[in-house]
Image 1: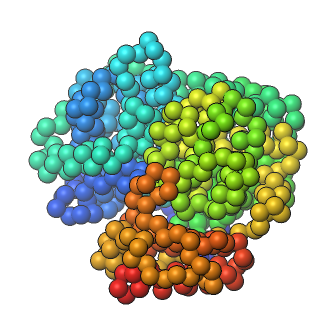
Image 2: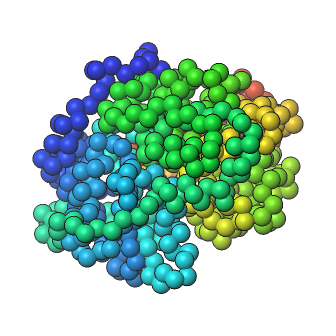
Image 3: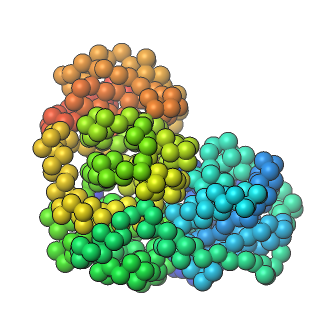
Length: 540
């Protein structure tokens, strides 16, 4: 924890926006240098123009690659294009538009030249593709590095299913983009982006919220809501929601500034718009007693933060458990066999809630993309990640978004408060009274690149230990129970505890997620033994 975590950003913490944008156009990547290549992670290509990792050549080449990819699989409908409030997002949007128009793609941008949250883009793609009148499928590009610091840019492709592209698509796009950069962009087509059509992302999304959230209950309850967009793309959405549904909702900070000078510093001393971090949300927490519910979103509004008067900022795992318990008892239009989706590093409190509801638990690897098929066909009614990202079905059991929706989860917190008369944190206390109070934490352990590569391919059978922190091991997993996909690491489970180990994609460490229903001391023992177990399996 940095000494300045949770304190107000100062002038020395701020990026030089003009220099950042100048570097976007001036610096040209050399794809023989790994750090300068186009690389798609779970949420697209990310980087800073200062590091020659997110520059005009990257975006021109990646957009051209997307054009070629969509043509190769027969996507002929429009492409929805949106961007968040990061400084590099608008230049990248301009570059992408030039390439899309140069290739004759029918592009739809925001009608009011507004910022576009990730869930609004997913909503738009699904709405278009679910209309029987539209014979040709649409897809989309959202330009955002999510909650990353102000100096970063991000570029993500969402195919016709509306969610994050799978690795078969992203690998193809990245490889082709790097080929285009290496050839000096000779095959990239560009044109002046004139005559581009528009789409009312905000109005259509906000109007449709009544079909997934009980907005009448929120209004009639009279509860007070404070919504902080943290300088992100949801800023105008919250005001529109307040006006459309006549809610007692105050937008706590309507300011958009690409330096994010109004933020408090995150745990490591960086400006990061993470609504699940108490350090990043410190200024929001100053209002803790002023509203019945306070919410926060990251820059593209795919993550949520929930603040209650009695408990402050809720742990994301805690809110997911409460949301699941509430929704599966109050959404009568959901199919009785619809499963509960969770990532394997989310809290086992969800497992216990699922058992009490007599619902099937669908546990998948890290990455929201795994929930997409189930959300589309209704076989999974809720999908959530421990990092404060989730989405769920409409009241009638049909798909809403196939990407994370932070606005939705924030509104759900208000519905829960309005309908039950209790805050989500009070309801979590009720769950712990029934099922126990777990201690959960993620830590890092050092690992060489070779050890990280070995861990990613490690088979659960390679773990020879039979006990973990005094309890018999009941499962050693290298594939997720829900869909039998590789988890890129291992998970070891006992009756009252578990740990999962996964290599970091950017640092020479591996991440250990661990939880114990036997208290903090037992959790520390689990973490200590987890390192020994993993190191032994890796030959360390």
